[in-house]
Length: 208
Image 1 (tube, one colour):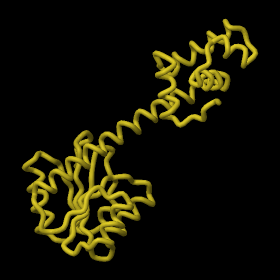
Image 2 (tube, helix red, strand yellow; image 1 turned 135 degrees about the vertical axis):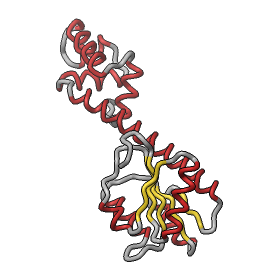
Image 3 (spheres, helix red, strand yellow; image 1 turned 120 degrees about the vertical axis):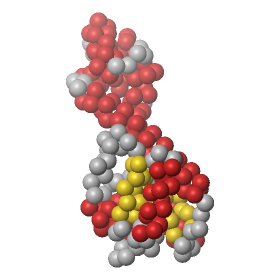
């Protein structure tokens, strides 16, 4: 079983000795791993919601590592991939990198090179997950705004002062102040500048 909060390194390699050696290496640096002999077995596996990366052999029975990468991309799975191969060539590397591969290591490689690539991939995935969680939280707050409050937020982040906002929306300054206060409270923003950064992360259209 995968620990619910433990970063996980997935290994897909049809070479039993290579899988075992990689898992032994990862244990020496206190990294949790799960290994699969076939890509089909890995693709059937439900990935845990933790920082993770995939060590993927390019040459696999029935399905190449690049095919696995394509399938993951089609599913919207953004796990960082470290490709391993004994038969690497430049076109293959370019294709893998263009499709978002984290690293491409050719056998034989130094253990430290693999460990460094894994640590970098896990860090990147963790940061990506944190960004996604923050955006999801912001989106949840934004969806609680009324249509009028969303209008007000759009004008506030465009730089309008309360008086201008009131004039634009044909309301009293008092009403505009109340709406603005509700927006700041619901979005948990401490300043218009912070509200603006939230709007950027949510990719909200800007008022010109």
